[in-house]
Amino acid sequence: AVACRLGRGGSRGVDAGRSLWARQEGTERAYTGALLNVHDKGVFRCICCGTALFDSATKFESGTGWPSFWQPIAPENVREHEDRSFGMVRTAVSCTRCDAHLGHVFDDGPRPTGLRYCMNSVAMKFAKAA
Image (cartoon, rainbow, N blue to C red; front, side, top):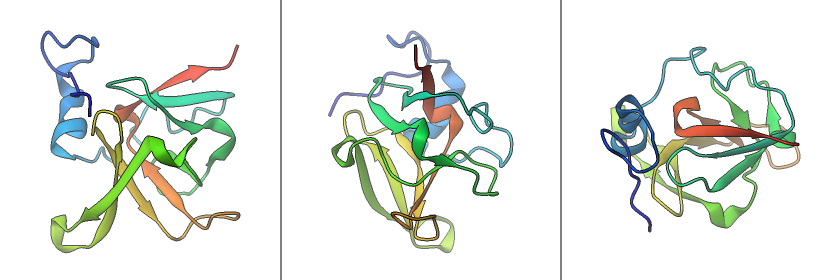
């Protein structure tokens, strides 16, 4: 895996505040993320390494306060693993390439997958389609 370079002097130019989410598996407060209301056509990419994570066509309004998607752009671009933090058992989602924490996936999403990839805006950047 490629190291997620965040913080002061990081080669990707990512501000230090974003390292909380990518390195320490933090969660931004609901309804505060910059990408929550992005509805343009394009691709949501990893803030650390630029890996394509989600196509805007799979984004939906979940009512949870976080950008939500019903499937990743390619299953090999994300890694799912058990998260037992905060006294809960959840499935965490990370970037396969750099291991940046992205959010969690739940089984209460819409068809066709029934999944809800609930992502942190700070862990992604949006590349608008030309």
